[in-house]
Length: 480
Image 1 (cartoon, rainbow, N blue to C red):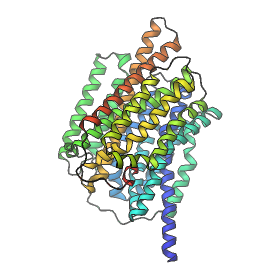
Image 2: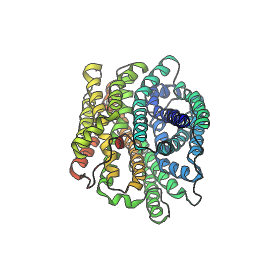
Image 3: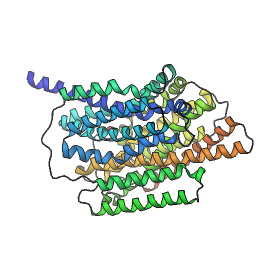
Image 4: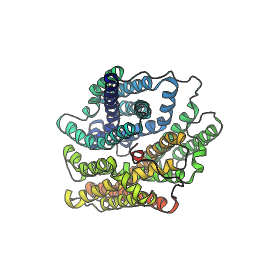
């Protein structure tokens, strides 16, 4: 009995170690947003070039998320988790010490690769550690809370570190965390069984889709400067289309595809992924543009910006603890998903009305609250919809596909909206409008287009999503 209690206690400590590793990855998606204006001023980024500080991370993260799971299957989950933590920690050191734009962007891309591996393998480790349904449900609840609550901690920590020290420390803070996670992982997480040796990695699929998306984003980011009909822009878009076509061909022929195309024959899977792309474009634009709006237009400090994001992130964290799951169990998938996305669209529309002399209570807080509620309600039914039509043994793969779609949609959507906002600002400045007014007009355009993306995602969920024939899983499933 004592031995069993000791083993159970060891598993829960191992869960905390895994969650700490995941928390480090989650932090990095929000902690950087608050530091963006400081990074821009220090390294001399342009408005559109600054997007690459975010997109370099998102593109490699999304591109290698599914591949990270395959690596765990082939080489062992604990070993790959440790490799991902080491890579992410070293890349964080590179980001923190970066003195040039190129070095920072490259290090961010390496961070995304390490983060993808950690995120993909951590969930598999948790599923292997907790085999009893009740324990697994509790473990997944903790994991879901860390993922949602990490956003709140990220914006606060980003504001504090940027305001009191410098932007370099939003990356250097990962060093002690990464070292601690690696050491505790070796001590607490078992090696597991010997992985099967007949798995193949879809390197061609990962390379082609990542290259296609990076070329597309690069073309969009430089579209204002080079011209949308220039040879460079059209050539980059053509190359991206060719790589995308190559990816489809590879996935249709390879034995173990990175993204099985047959998944998209399922109506709910296709709808959830399409809505996820649109919603991610709106969400990432909100995080990116609102941080710049509050600092560059309203003149707030990094710490004030971090506190301004707190209501939305806290609401999302609270909803992730089970409220959203109970709403889904009561009303099904379609209504919560469509309703949450519509609330998010309304929140972005309020940001699109924010003036130059805006206040927190009137022009920031209402939009933050609506976006927090909308995202907190819509995320779980979106994941459930993505997995409702597939067999149980394919649910993890379907979840990985929708997460990848979310990251890629965020990267491409942010590139498009940031580019259009920069073009709007430049045009108004050329017409004699004051710099602050022109800057705010560009941000308002991005918010309005983001609201349109969220509205379209909600419409897709309302019109095309269907109720699964089989009953939904336990309430713990959405948290996963």
